[in-house]
Length: 394
Image 1 (cartoon, one colour):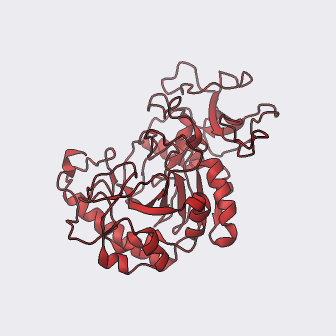
Image 2 (cartoon, rainbow, N blue to C red):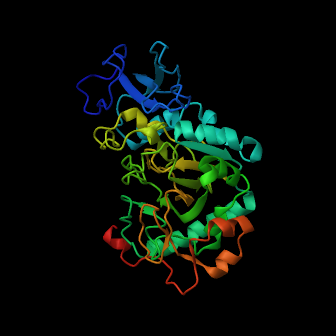
């Protein structure tokens, strides 16, 4: 076990069952019970169970073993064990640790194949965990075109940031925040993500009868050989955003290249979309449970779609590879949340959809794509392109 005096010993963030030994590294992961909580049909607003993990250490750290269970209302507490190295002394040791432990355990239980037949199942998984992964969401030709678009847009962004300060941390960039319009819906590669055969049926189930609209597009990229972690955060924390169980805003990220243990896969904490914003917030870097840093969505093949409730806690991880990692997205808002459109191009919390899609791009969409993009289409001339003040570290 790691010595108690170790400077890298993880700090507790949540209250755990007494049976979880404080000498071990306890990892709380909240899940929410989606069953009916009472005869009145109200869903429970509190955590129905905790998924707890404890780490044990192996001097050589050559393999991983998991012992998994859920701490439910009636089940007895048990633990999930992984083997990690005691300290990260060198970059090579860091790489070795990531190679062994990086990635959500049993990742396939968060994933489905796309299509109408799995839409209801995917929506249930999304509501329970705060995200769901749809495999084979993008055909190879469209995936290649989107990757080429990412490289093109990133090249322009980097021209305005020669020191690579980034706008989401050192070496990290938001595609949308780097744009003069705040989004990339003026690019046909991003606009085409509004209506994907494998994803649209899932979004219809997630948003239900109230419906939804496309409210933006962007994503992020992280440069090669970036070794820092991005702080855990949620993309939506506006007043009343947590008042309903239903997701106000959903982001769909696309893996244009495989996500691996080394190229900066996003880490995510399942179940956190249902935590009260008044009582819980993502921990600071120095307070985050160390094992959460390994809860990454990898390995994933290219062409996968990560459908995420914007209230779910997530963050970037180191990209130790020699390639830039791209993760473009399209953003969707429930009709009960998004109140209309605006010609002001600022990244509001999706309460107003920005008019940032040229009419020429809009006309090239599918009929359903045009329907859900009706609030973002702009009839006038707009100034597109990367912002010139990126070097200021915005």
